[in-house]
Amino acid sequence: MEDKPLRVAMFTDNYYPFVGGVPNSIEKLTKGLRAMGHSVTIFCPQYPEQKTPDADPDIVRCKLLRYHKTKVYNFPLINVFSSRIRKEFLRRGFDVVHSHHPFWMGKKGHKLARKYGLPSVYTQHTMYDQYSHYLPLFKRAFKRYIAHSIICKFSQRCDAVFSPVGTSKAYLESMKVTTPISIMATGVYMVPKGAGGALRKQYAPKDGILLCSVARLAPEKNFHFMLKGLKRVKELTSAVFTCMIVGGGPDRASLDEAIVELGLSDTVVMIGEVPQPEVGRYLEASDFFVFASTSEVQGTVLYEAMAARCGAVSVYCSGADDVIVDGYNGYRTHEDIEEWAARVAALLDDPAEMRRLSDNAYEHAKQYSVEAMAEQATRTYRAVIAKKNG
Image (cartoon, rainbow, N blue to C red; front, top):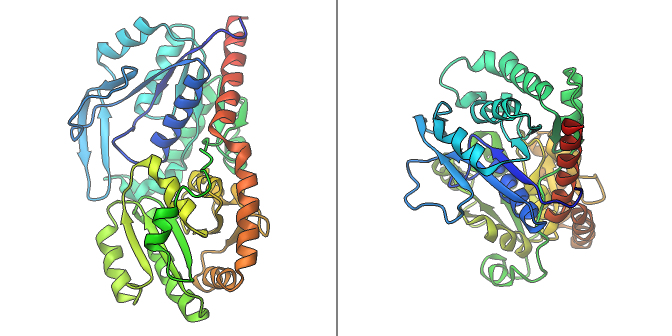
């Protein structure tokens, strides 16, 4: 029946307490689907640092074969051979399997779907070649060949693929993937006006402008470029401004040092990691969003900023290219300090233009709400289920 609630199994190689785009996306889609009456079970790693059990009974933590630690990133390798995964899968009687990685757990979910005659859906969240520097071995081969091959082969085997943005869809199509691909961004929560009032009083300079950037403090997020850009902004404008950087990660110490070396101690505030539900308050407190990441596939944080009434300046990357409409809700620049800084400085000198872009950004974000994305996912689930059963 068309209105029958669905039972969805999600398989992922990372989830909370790891902080990142994929866990954020899964959590939002799960909430949206459950609000529609569907049941969702998340199969994910059991992290050694997780001290308390999940309050959600539909999170299935899977034991690890190995937990590979590096200075910047930890890799949980789930024991996909455990009989418990299959037992939990069968006990819950799913209608569809949704994988969020093409690797270890994604393959496990796909194999279970095929074995028991269920449709298999995949979200292409990440351009994995951009993360090759985290690997202990075969960095160059992974970047040039292996990542692309894995993504395309896995996509081709599924019944449907979600691509967060048009550029990601075009990438898959250019690699000859013939599986039906639909664009579905990570949903965003629209932030009430005034939600960040207390934070604005705390961090905004008197009669000045408050900028914000949110991301994991890691090399691919390009914060060292941003700090150099902000130094140049100070040289280009007399406008008073402060920039909050929200997030934690392995680059924190080096960024703290750079702030001092660049003379930005009175301009940049390192907020640190905050719970995901609180991020919207920091964004709403701000006048504008600045970004320099080169690894975004879907630019979820850009949607989040816009849902909090922030236009954005970003460097060109696939995520920003699909979210920012130049001159309407923000601007994109090349990864050039002078160009990026000049664009930010021009906006600081024109508060009316900044407000116009931010108002447009809020209107743009409405079409990507959590509710809208859950409805889109449901339509795709029902379509592949009907095709599989027909």
